[in-house]
Every structure is written in structure tokens, then in C-alpha cells.
Amino acid sequence: MSDDAKERWQASTIALGERSAYKKVWELQSQDLDLASLAVAGHTDEATLELTAKGFIDTLRATTGLDRNDVILEIGCGIARVGKPLSRECLHWFGADISSGMLAHARARLKERPNTTLVELATVGLQEFPRDAFDLVYCTIVFMHLFEWDRYRYVEETFRVLRPGGRCYFDNFPLDSAHGWNVFMEGCRYPLERRPAHLSMSSTREELGIYLRKAGFVDVRVHDLPNELIAATGRKPE
Amino acid sequence: MNPDPQDTAATLAALQAELEAVKRRDSEFRANMVKEFLDRGERNSYVHLLHEERAALLKRQQESFLDLEELTRKVEAESARADALHAELSRIKGSRAWRVAKALLGEPPAAPAAATVQPAGLAPVEPAVFIYYLHTSPFRIYRDASFTLRGWAWPQDGGSITGVRVNLSGRLYSGRYGIEEPEVIARYGAQPANPHPGFEVAFDTPQGRHSLSLEAQVGGAEWRWIMRTTIWCEPKA
Image 1 (cartoon, chains in turn brown, red):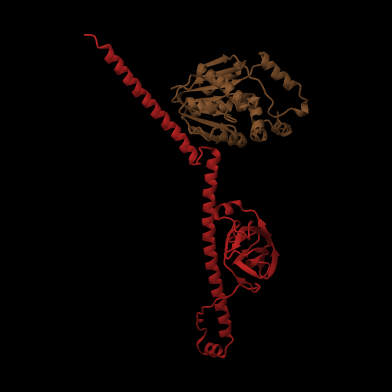
Image 2 (cartoon, each protein chain N blue to C red):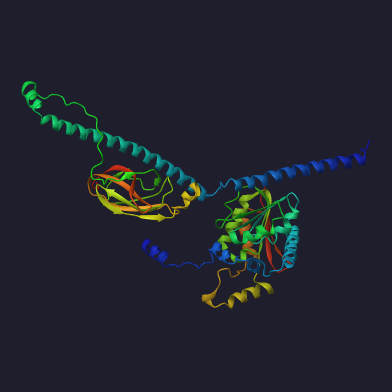
């Protein structure tokens, strides 16, 4: 194949739509707290938010372990649904999100929690954070909104910012569960031209495991969770 | 002899507490490290490095422009002095004494003369005190057919600028005033009469030496000059 043909082929490709414009997509979904809560959790009342967050913290405790001295980072913290209760169980909780609107809601919800810090991410990645800093980095209900390359980018970056011996957690929904299939079919029903940029996309167990192993994690395990999600956990070598 | 179980338990508890304290200190150190990293605003990112490099390059560029301005001023002073000397020489050569002395002694040396020569061709505009900065420095050799002077300015007395122009050896070029300069406002605060102090003026640069005067109209009334210099325009190599 000639260089000319390669160039023409590259010039002929078109953008994949606005799914990669994560900042734009999530700023639009955070215009008020109800909208933001619906976008990140599927419901708006505080009691349900607290309940689902506690369920997730139990999952975290069972899969990665939790320690009251942990310095924790959540990737894609949204309105701090998890961060608010989790900050009571660790030394310091950092929440990172690409949407300043989401972080504004999170800030209001965390005003009574002094051991929390919120950080707006400029783009995909954790470039705002130094290396070897955290005991635990987790990312929940986020991967379904990301392209695969960006999912891996966050796994790679997590490896960088974790201290040696630090733990990680990433989850998504699989296709081979009733819930996962329902989500998939909801996406199927969208007319092609009206497919939203944040449409949920599944992961496989193999995919999540490969990301963690390729990034350098050890003790990699993929868990089937009671809520029909799958989660990969791993540890940065000492 | 077996150790006292109570002592062993107490020792273990003390060690456990010490270990816990060490872990806590380590965690606190790392949490503070992250907070300091964030607080500094100094991000360990490629974009940040590029910003730093850009700032360093801008500083170097500004220093270079200052050197060029100083050089231009020296050249202007020397040119004015040379013009004055030429004028004096012409006057001497036209005098009767010169002709007599030439007949008797040959060429006498010309007397030095200090004089200040105003740039030629400029309209009689008065100066005023402006605070200004020029993004595109006029202190350069001009090789294109035209040039756009960009910058920001406001009068020190807070008057409202209602127009800008360039006077190039008597030829006037109107410019545009009222361009946003958010970095200037962030640094100096807003001047109420000039909320958007940015400007740009495009002007032709025909070959040769010209007098350039950047001028502003204050309060819709008289024009005042902001800065003046001599420029040299040369054809492209």
C-alpha cells in the first residue's frame, strides 16, 4: 500500500461522535442536583443514594479491604454519592471528576466532611495527581460511559498514583446477566441518529482482567458481584 | 522460665499501637503531599510543562524586545545627530568663510553640533501618560507589505479611549479598540472607562525609514500619542 493511499484513508475517517467529549457530555448532565443524581445513580432521593453507597462500600470492603488509615481516590466521583459515607471510614478521601458541575454538587454535599478534597480532571487521566500517593483507587459506575482506550488509560494512571502495595477496583456491567442484557437492549432501541454520547457499554471479565495485568497489577481478581456487576481488583507490587 | 502472658499481651498491644501510629503518619504524609501538589497549582502534567515553557519563551521574547527598543532608541539618537551634523555641514559649506578657508587651507573639519530632531511627517499630537503593552513589538525590521500592531492601553488618568490609530510619517491608519484582555483585567483590575483595553491597528510598511506614532483619542476629543519610534522597512531577502 502506498503512503498516498494511507494518507487518503486516514483523511477519509470521521470522528466517533461526541462520546469522547466527556467533559461536555457530563457538564450537560450536571445542571442541577436532581439531573446529576439521575445521571450518576438513577435516582434522586438522599436516602436511596446513601443506601446504594453503603452497599458499594461493603463491596469495597469485601474485595479490596478498607483501613481507617487509607488515603483513597475515587475516579469519576460525580456528586460524591460514595465519597460522603466512605470519608467517615478512611483518613482522607479524594474525589476526581471531569465535570465541574458534578463537583459543585459534590462540594455542597461534602461541606461537613473536612477530610475530603475534590479535583476537576482536565481530561482523561489522572495527571493532576502525583505518583505513589494513594492506598486505594476505585472507579465505580463509570467504565460503561467510557471507550475502551480511556478505560485502560485510567487503569494505567491508577497504577502510577497508587503507592507500592496499594489496591485498585474497577467495575462495569457484563452482557451475560439479566441486568446487563436489559441495559444493552435499552441501548439497542435507540434510533441510530439519536444514540446519546453517554450510552452505557458493557465490559467482559476478560477485558477488565487484561487491563489490570497489562498495567502491571498483581493479585488480579475478577469478581461477580451480587448486584450483577463485575469488578476487577488488583494490587501494585511492593 | 515462661514469659508472663500478661506481659506478652501488653508488649504486643504496644507494638500494634506503634505500628498503627506509623501507618497513620505515613498516610497523613501522603494525603498532605497530594494536597500540597494540588494547592501549588503546579501540576505534574505535560500541559503544565508546556505552559511553563511558553511563559519562559514569552519572558525571553519580551527581554529581546526591550533590547531591540533600546537599540532602536540609540539608532534614532545617532540618526538625529547625523542629520543635524549634515545640516550644519551644508550651512557651513554654503558660507563665505568656508569658501575663503577652502581656498586658503583646504577642507576644514566640521564643527560638532548637538540637536534634537523631531520625527518627520508626524501630526502635531501631544503626548499623554498611558499604561500600555504591545503584544506585537514594533521594534523590528519590517519585511512584509503590512504589519498589525496589537496590544492594550489605557490612560493613567482613567479617561475613556474612543479610538486608536497609527500615524506613519503623516499617513493615518484607524484601528480597533475594545478588544477583551482578560489577563490584563485579572492582573491590574478593570479600569471602568476602558473595560476592554485591547486594540489592533494594521498599517502599510513601504520600503524606507518612517516615523511611527501610536495614538489614542481620549474622551472623543483630542488625539494623544502613546508611543513613538522610527521604523525601517526593507524588501524581503
